Amino acid sequence: MGNTQTVIFKNKPVITGSYAIVGPKEGDGNFGEFFDYVMKDDSFGEDSYEKAERKMIEQAITGAIQSAKIKPSSVDLLLAGDLLNQIISSSYAARQFNFAYLGLFGACSTMSESLAIGASLIDGGHFDNIVCSTASHFSTAERQFRFPLELGNQRPPTAQWTVTGAGACVLSKKGNGPVITSATFGKVLDYGINDVNDMGAAMAPAAMDTMLSHFRDTKTGPDDYDLIVTGDLGKLGSEILIDLMEDKGIKLGLNYNDCGQMYFTREQATLCGGSGCGCSATVFNSFIMKKLREGKYKRVLFMPTGALLSTTATQQGETIPGVCHAVVIESNVAKNSI
Amino acid sequence: MTEKERNEAYNKYVQNKIPKTRAWPSLFNSFWIGGLICVLGQGINDLLLLWFPSLAEQTAWTLTLIILIFLASFLTAIGVYDLIGKFAGGGSIVPITGFSNSITSPALEFKREGIVYGICVKMFTIAGPVIVFGIVSSMLVGLIYLFV
Image 1 (cartoon, rainbow over the protein chains, first blue to last red):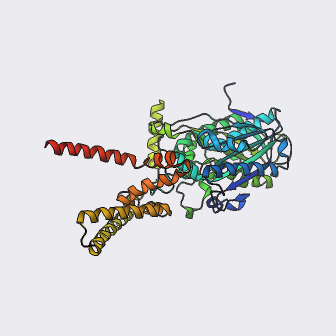
Image 2: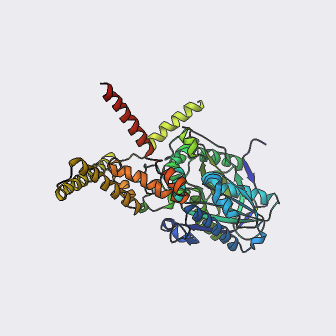
Image 3: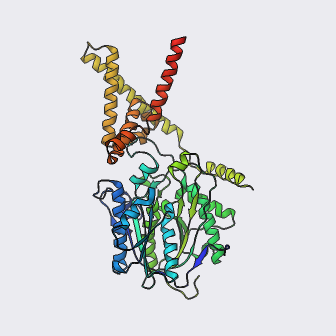
């Protein structure tokens, strides 16, 4: 103990179902055609954006369960989290369902955090079906972390755009679908960045550390994956990660990309790209899952990052710690895979 | 390398890497929109004096301010002022219209939390410091004026 951060799953939990729901702007983005549902307006028929966010998680969870072709009654546990104070979106959504619930907070890394924990619980033989879910909403994040929507201010060039969307997937002991073969739990790293408009730079060191630990623990390298994808480092953050990895002697090639960087089109003017829990969650549960099911990707290293800040901490002058958890998903179960 | 040195080196590296705001286009847009708002104010003032010649000049200026504040509030409510602000930056923040926007926007945003705890409490989250500094500095100037 103490010299590995990685769990290698002997029983290879299966991702039997997935679902992604997004807002209209996200629907117009680069992944638009892959999402299961695009909302017509981002209030989703509710009288507050917080309720809309909650409703998105509920729909994502229900959708994922349907996609897994299992009965809701056979779900044992829900692992979910979001960005709002006291993770209200997840907890309030959980009361709609009749299964046990563990609330998680890993900021924008929640998708891989829930997958890593869920896969560990299933691999250990403790549960049969676990739902992992997370969401974010542009308007709820703006009011909690930044400014009122109608304030006429300018965003700095490093700013990112919180994705309105929720993703969910079902992990099962058996079934058909891509499998989770290993997970690397990340350390919290803080390189002294205190600019809340530059989360990419704050989180990139955590991504580097988790990636290095993962390669060390699994004895793999960047070339062993069809896709290495971070969550929402954005344009700047992913460039920084490439530099940081190069300093450590590892060259990330064309198989590396970042969900946030890819999310929106150039015309959507989101500066450094998408961010938020929903960013990696919706890309993973739509595009990446589709490619894995089709076998276009054989092995994906999915490693969303989270900035573990709060407005209280930053207003008191604290710097921004980051965390990153990595999960390896494989499309087919080869005998001697990692 | 100590942690402090590492963080300093990293921050320096990030600063060099950050895409820079192109200053000249921002300054230009800021200047002409800001100027336009001032021209609008002058226009309203001139019209008031033209239409109501009996108005005292001081009253006309007060009315002009009220009209500008109302217009900015209205544009905020219909979702236009933030677009102007995105384009003009300081040009639409510095004039009194920006002040109006900074009060109306949180009032709208936090309406959902109720009149007292939402609108009334949150209304000054952005403009509050401006009001505090305004009052404190006017008190200081008043004191100086009293004794000098």
